[in-house]
Image (cartoon, rainbow, N blue to C red; front, side, top):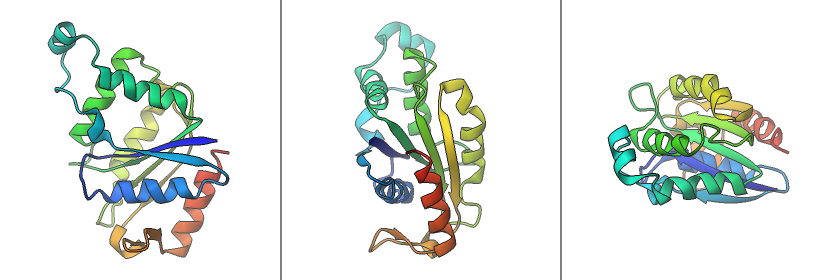
Length: 174
């Protein structure tokens, strides 16, 4: 099984990247690839730019990466209660190729933040809209107070209850 994992963040210090990487490593028997959305940076989407540029190769490549995977894990960063601009732009361009961005793949949606909210607003938005983009959501999990529950040095979730929940969620991909 090939799992594609990424953080919906363009931060070089993304805690969501750490969470996505750890989650992917917990999928039983899976091989995984960590994707960096910085590799898919494009101009801000608009209808005018689409008419001028067509569909950028980066959006085509991102869509193809999803298509090559057996399952997808995304950990969403939250900016002002919503998606990061970097992810939203990549998603918008890709949805112009095909609204079924996730191509019926099983997905796990995660989110985390340094605060107690755990980026639940963006996670809820992602889960609630998944059906419109052909994402087969097998589970979701918010990790609140990231630095209290994750050891950055060992790159592991240290909260036993959250770790049990995470393993249950990602095992639904197999």
